[in-house]
Image 1 (tube, rainbow, N blue to C red):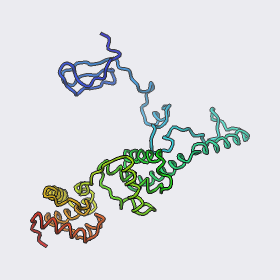
Image 2: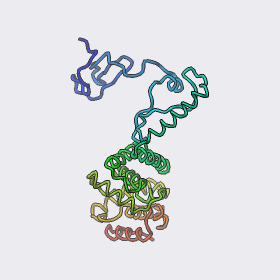
Image 3: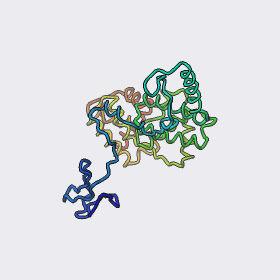
Image 4: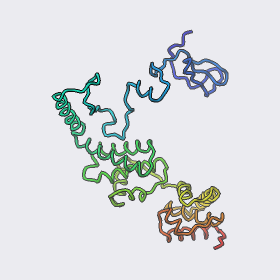
Length: 309
């Protein structure tokens, strides 16, 4: 029986029902890890026909460009006329040809951003790179933020609004969708727009995309605040258990997650003997000392904690 062209994608062994399958690239086979059945053989290798033994050799032999990405205004699909001023044989071109290539290069750059939406995206993606480096955002988060911003740009909702505010709102929404503990104040620190504009743009994006975002859990902020305050894992676990207990008794309803996380850490640090001042915790949480005191009193009174001051 010739299995050189499989009719379906194998994800389950027909003999034993095992899902743990091994793909042997050297033999071109798919094998069951449990019973050893060869599900498919003579698979087509979709990789390159050349071999490389070093990263430099692989870069030299590769004949394709970088993968497409939403973080570039043209998605990385457009071409560029190089600045080497050399022909295909590596020889220097004549002065006459150099003038023609210079003119072609100039118009090529102009035509890449001849539309207003392209100029808008080019500026926004440069700003996205700046924010990503300052906030240490991951590549996936950048892609998600660029995708949200492009949706707004295609709906012509950027016109008349601050590009920076819409971009920060897109990044903040991407963080909320991926449950990353970030607040608007974290972005405002590196921006030239005020918080009200960003919040207005954020609400606009939510309405246009018809998203229903849940309030961030205060437990998500605990590891971040613990790292800033240099608290141990015991204190972190104790703070998380306090917040779970508070949620059970419905003390967390209507409260800001950062303030609750800070107050829980304040209680946990006292109980574990790693006392931190309210000022230190309020600075790490980005809230006022009064907020920490109010949330602390609520936790202690409702949960009946005995705190030794």
